[in-house]
Image 1 (cartoon, one colour):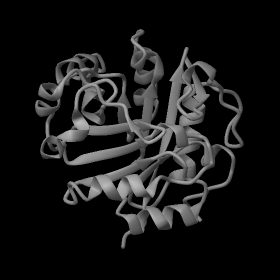
Image 2: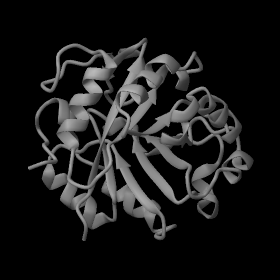
Image 3: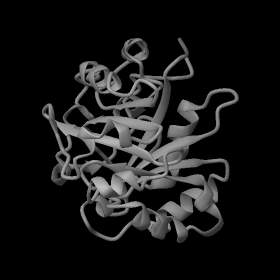
Image 4: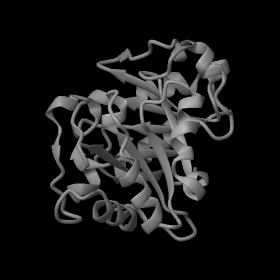
Length: 237
């Protein structure tokens, strides 16, 4: 079994990095981190990537643009700044995309850097099952979002494993920033419907022991923020 990759997460709101807690977005506050001072996106991104750096592994950062997810303007300039200053970076971007056309339109604004942006389509944001069916199987990332064990799924994405792209995130929002442990039961249940996909978890990881259990459950990677900022997890160790 290969080690579970830690993918650091940057949550953007009103131009700042915020600490996500249990999916209660109205209560998110600017991040206070042991890794870097302040809440400016670029220094925080650099610190997260340094903490998660591993030999022969390209830098990868997941960004949740919370303004865009909630229907406001995307952080285009901030995202472009990250791409410009971190030239080896691959960016997984959730910006509330309703369909592949909307994702392509936003990525087009990054010019030559667009090839380093991989769109994440949240089940809470996708417009319809038809929009799910139109996703590029090899490059799109689907996030199956839930809260309190209930799917957030107006598009019906949870019910169509035959349409899931190659990479799928199990996003358990009420465990994000809660230090409550990963929801491995949910991961196993969904993976059982499509075991040939690449499975990525999100929410709840506190330690290296949690990552080991996630690997046994079938996760290839896990999205992490709070445990990195609080110094509880050092993937380099």
